[in-house]
Image 1 (cartoon, rainbow, N blue to C red):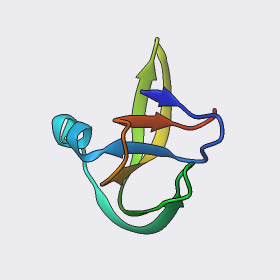
Image 2 (cartoon, rainbow, N blue to C red):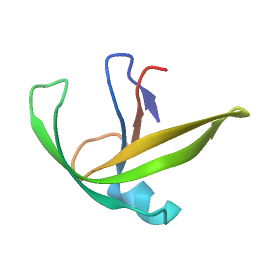
Image 3 (cartoon, one colour):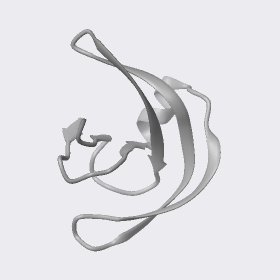
Image 4 (cartoon, rainbow, N blue to C red):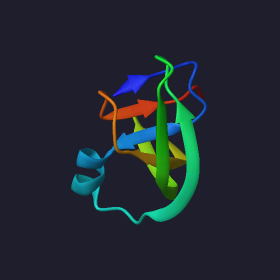
Length: 76
């Protein structure tokens, strides 16, 4: 996982998403990556409870079809 203080959203790779088997819905978002490329975010999991060192936060997580990171966490 990568914590990206400049990111506004949480993003997950298809590989991790398949392993977690959580419910996904259609979305129509686009993301501009740090290197200036564009990535379509067509799928989102809403209100996913995420536990990091005992702190649980509920977040919407977008599915990314491209990118080098498995999970990108935005700023708190």
